Amino acid sequence: MVNFKELISVSLILFSVIDIVGSLPILLDLKKRGIQIEAGKASLAALVLMTIFLYAGEALIRLFGIDVQSFAVAGAIVLFLIGMEMILGIRIFRDSEAANSGSIVPVAFPLIAGAGAMTTIISLKAKYEVVNIQIGIVLNIVFVYLVLRSSNWLGGLLGVGGASVLRKIFGIILLAIAIKLFKDNFHLIVAPPAAGATLPK
Image (cartoon, rainbow, N blue to C red; front, top):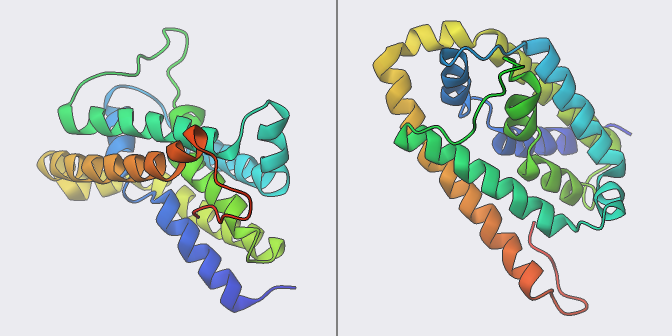
């Protein structure tokens, strides 16, 4: 049953984790490098990934012998490298010569439906009804689509200088998020919690 209080809470949590507005400098940088981003394709891919993870995420990653903490650490490393690109203006990820689209990687994953969003979805299931989480995901994807569609216009408002400053600021924020995600999960891989201990959300 839909609970509007739960729906608002879930939507705000996912909005903070996805942070598509904060990813705007990354999107502008990808387009500047000639990589095409199809708003509809990226949004649909992210919606499918997050929905699959909502219903079968934990079972799916465990099927491959991967625990949630290892998945989060891998995502944190990718986010860290993207943050380094933004701050230092270097190229870490090399584009394939056969493809010039970034709709799926890195936009749909890991920028939108990244490790942070995936692990958040799993933790939300322990507290909120699945139907409210699903609606919250859809609402966030609609907003993501609007931002992706308007990225050039938003970039025009910022200008070259504004986009550069924003890119570095959010690069630092992305590094901080990556480090926190790494810190919250890496020690659980090295030393798993004792029976009955509560995992960090």
